[in-house]
Length: 153
Image (cartoon, one colour):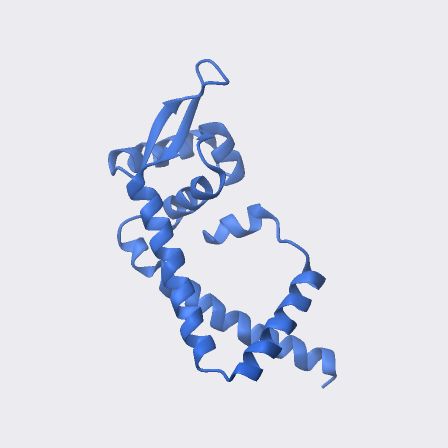
């Protein structure tokens, strides 16, 4: 096995561990909202109030499908619909405090889980990991927001 193959194996193994952290962090939220609904909340937490059609486009779903999803989110108190001050007749979707809190809770749960894992490592291991992850991130480049939204992250 080449050094690149060995590094690819280790990176795949680490990515599975991180996906496990992500899955556990979102598990409680998925008792309250579906994964597609959580994706909407994450998008709004990141982008702020956004026109319905833009949200549908970002999520790569039909506007009527998104409208039904938004109806359920509004009814449950996760988001509100507001008039778009920049486009007459257009409607924006905006997180409520409750919706923002759900996204923040998931993010904090994920941060704590990662900190716990890092706490099990020595200082030298954490320093080496930080340098390696910085190098990996630079080589990979910034992922497209659309790719991250697929997973609700």
